[in-house]
Length: 408
Ligand code: AMP
Ligand code: MG
Image 1 (cartoon, helix red, strand yellow):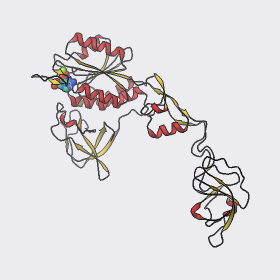
Image 2 (cartoon, protein in one colour; image 1 turned 180 degrees about the vertical axis):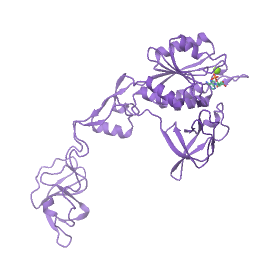
Image 3 (cartoon, protein in one colour; image 1 turned 120 degrees about the horizontal axis):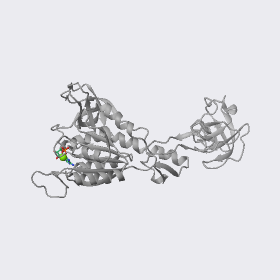
Image 4 (cartoon, helix red, strand yellow; image 1 turned 45 degrees about the horizontal axis):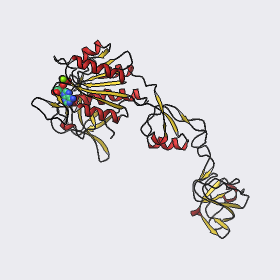
């Protein structure tokens, strides 16, 4: 049995970012992962321009002005944003200018209009600028043409989309989304639209995993419920490993008489690298690779175990495979509002919620029974508190390491 850290490292070693890419338009780029470095052949700002509504002046002319005896300048032009200045500012002259407009040649400083007094064709400069270049956005000071603007491997959200638009990157190379096959195993399982007979269990994992995979930007391929029948399981697994980058099955990985998955993975040429992990819940987690590169996670069937395995292990695997550079799990240290208990034998994950209380993140245990078969109190959960192996109690008010599963 591997520790959680060992299992993590075994999994990550097996997964390389995929090579498949595709072109998307900027409009369709939100949520995708950039597969190329982006640079621009434009400087930012493109040219010297005004950061204020005011007057473009020569610093020399106005540096000694004062409110009692102000320098006055002749207004020779008006330059709104978007207009190319035509005149050169000579000594004693100025141009009315607006935010974003190009700086006219000859000028080097902007006086904000609040510090001026316009009288007809002339304007009095009441307060001297603190320095030459004040309120001028100099060409190339935000970015120099040719440097890398965005690196391959980042997820594209609204800030990056803004940068791409400005760089005129209207068509982008992104990683294609990996396909993830998902199925549930168990003779007891029925679909949510079937009538429950005695002894049966409604398949919730398939839906939970489908949502989980979609939330990571991968493409879920739900394959339904497969009975605990070795032939059916073998056929399903064979198809899944030949058509998907990752396969997630739930159930059938414990040591019961009906737990066939591990044996079938071996029969189909899979290399089983992990058979169990010292984690609670989630101990029977099985991890295998296939010669064609397919990655297989045999996830225990209990709904809470499945969630813990997905958040702790599958999440980073899908992220890394998808091409994200930042695929590592995000752990926070926060104060727990509840006392957290463990038997100390395995690394224990307790489900709950990170909440913001008076501006500070705190962990609150999900209410109700903490039993890996209790999926009812999963609702509202966004994080897992971790009790390290060997530790039995973390008191309310102490800090605990927390794994975020959903965006906070
Ligand atoms: P297993 O890992 O197959 O031994 O299943 C462990 C427990 O999880 C059993 O109580 C199953 O009935 C339950 N279970 C297995 N698969 C699912 C599923 N897809 N949805 C909900 N519960 C499940
Ligand atoms: Mg089962």
